[in-house]
Amino acid sequence: MDKKLLEIIFDNVYNGIYIVDGQAVTIAVNKAFEEMSGITNAELVGKSLYDLVGEGNYFSGSASLLVIEHRRPVTATYSTKTNRKLLVKGRPIFNPDGEIEYIVNTIWDLTVVQYSQQIDSDTARSQMLAEEDIITCSERMMHVIDLAQRVASTDSTILLTGESGVGKSLLAKMIHRASERKSAQIMQINCAAIPETLIESELFGYEAGSFTGADRKGKPGLFEMAHGGTIFLDEISELPLHLQSKLLGVIQDHEFFRVGGRKVHKVDVRIMAATNKDIAALVAAGKFREDLYYRLNVVPISIPPLRERREDIPALIRYFTDKYNRKYNSYKKLSESLINQMVGMAWKGNIRELENSVERYIVTSPVDHIGSEHAMFEADNVLAEGTTLKQILHQHEQKVLLKAYRQYGTTRRVAAALGISQASAARKLKGLRQQPRKPEPAGKNE
Ligand SMILES: Nc1ncnc2c1ncn2[C@@H]1O[C@H](COP(=O)(O)OP(=O)(O)OP(=O)(O)O)[C@@H](O)[C@H]1O
Ligand SMILES: [Mg+2]
Image (cartoon, rainbow, N blue to C red; front, side, top):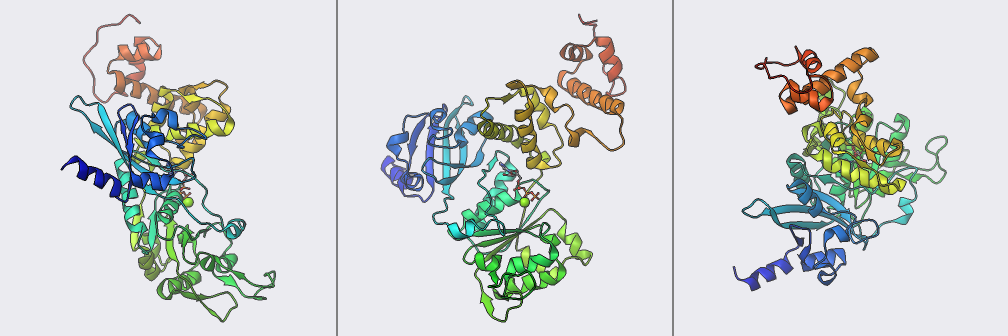
């Protein structure tokens, strides 16, 4: 293909393109990027992303820097100094020596142009999802995001599943912002957090005088407020059965009555729901309507738990470290050994738990360089009920020894790494090792 044609393509595709070299120096951005970001090619060319990223700077973060750090494709969302929100997919191009020669970033615009101040201030009833970014370098997660982007532009109902803290709410918000509906509201309700007696009026609103304590004038519900936009029903499994049938009606006919009302309200709303329960099992047990389940489950999106995408952990740790350093005005850093240790943990609370741990380390560490002793006794990862301190210490010792043995391969090197004698390393490892190894020559530590 000749150069002129390539340039024509570069400047006429709908996605933004941002190309840097292996040192993160900007080579070129295309017209679509200039338009969506409000930042020109001339401002950026020749500048290093290391200098363009940071608080108050051009970009809140950079996929290219993550690509350089992890040597693999990365997907992330960022904001710009021009107040735009961008979804960036960065891909490394390697030279024959295996060095990164270029990084090609493809960019989608997630900026919300208009936004209603009036509804936004009414946060007691509904809350706009907070501004948060997605960071991932796991292939499975990138497939999830690809799928989410593909269905974003349709009106299909989406059911997001995954354990608590995996990022369901975050993804719901991204889908809304990647859709044609982004200039209207996304209204969220957590069906588990609101008393059963109030959910109906929250969702559908009520007419004047429909129940005691109700507002005299009546009030619109979330469905009316989300008109033209999206409604996100979190913890859908907790929706009471009688409301499940009312919801089914809205999905089928796009209309409903307010509580105590006689007037039919028509709405144009995209429905997303999320759950960390096994809804199919609830259907089987008669606790969730089967017909509603099928109506909601048009596009199922399942988000894998963090322990099944451990490659995301280091990048997330750095992201959260940065976030909380900014929040607490500190310059703390987690050591490589602590990061490695965290990569191996269970993370039952997924990304939320990881984020909380990073925040806790930053807040509680008296030193700037935070070492692995801080993660020693993460409650959720180590404690089981009914264990004594002695048992916990013993379990932990075994874990450390096994890990060291896997890493170093001989009791002599384990002893050296952990600062114990080889005899004691050998004794402690006895019975822990699955296969006996051939005898090793005694080391200096003996
Ligand atoms: N890929 C990611 N990159 C950065 N932050 C993330 C990512 N995924 C989740 N988070 C953060 O982790 C926290 C938990 O995510 P979120 O609230 O979306 O989880 P959830 O699946 O909705 O949990 P729950 O089931 O408890 O509602 C949030 O603060 C979110 O911003
Ligand atoms: Mg959630």
